[in-house]
Length: 437
Image (cartoon, rainbow, N blue to C red; front, side):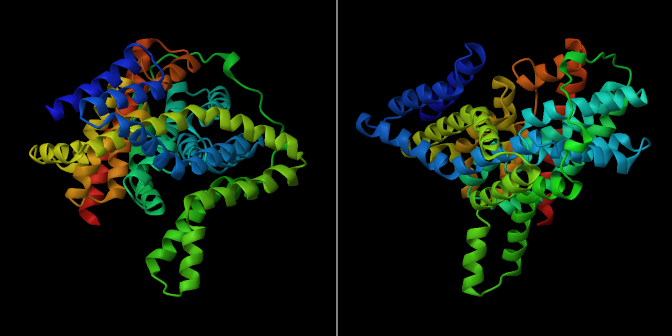
């Protein structure tokens, strides 16, 4: 009966979000309350359970996500992302231009949220298409595959960052593993798959092309690259230090502080404020306005993450988590595959990769702990599953369709197929990595 209540709660969440279009945060709260009552949590303790769940998740992530959004917005507004893209095109040349846009999308996708990266890269894609007379999907889909994979696999993006916290994984090690898995997923789902789509007709709408900054207004090449990628470089550096196992307590304490993801993001934002802001002649009020707009962009993401924490805490406090773990053990399915599958099913029903990943976390966590599954790989498995089955209930589906002016059929053949390919290849890479480490 307990398991039935949990399954009904998840089904109710899916129906509220995908069928009735109720705000995901509100849906999480309603379902958490109903689940808590039905699972026998005393009413005088239910509110505290929900508050604790929200607080535990938000306390760890609010700095990472809000500061990450500020950094990404500044990278876009300052022209640093545009500069990175231009340099990559110059280095790759016309012959390897498709691979150039993939690398550009990957680099841009690491520090930028998906929506910002998508809109930012559209002018580059269209300008390449018009200049070299190339098929639009052939050029555009590989870059967007790179953006999508970084969004689903790599910190500091919201879902993988939240999963790292909930699974008690290592942010830097997850990032390293994520890159090893992300690269083959991008190659197969991007350039290789796009070669089969050259025949798809597309007439990109000129109204979707934003105005690019003039060359003289762009920051320098090294400035753009180092500032945009600074969070990644810092996380990798502190992870390498930890692997060497230095024993000096002063150094250990320093790198423990410096390697904290929140501190890394704050250092990167402070650096960007100077290198892409003040040193480029921008006034502090203008920069702060950019940061304010960035926080508005991620406010709902933060609330959704908090709501997922409430549902997870209700499941934990009710004691049902142990029963779920016992049931799932009997399925004789590898925990990494199971985490991927649950996320994929929820993604298909809800349409949000973030909601799919965070909902899966509360279900798969007990099994992951009891089977001693690598938490870093579980983050990636759930992330890969959350990219599967993108269709009409996914905003990314409609962004791609409208920007590229495609029919529904061709959007399914290109975008929806690409998302499932990267999810499947990602799972295979994770399972292979699990055998090697």
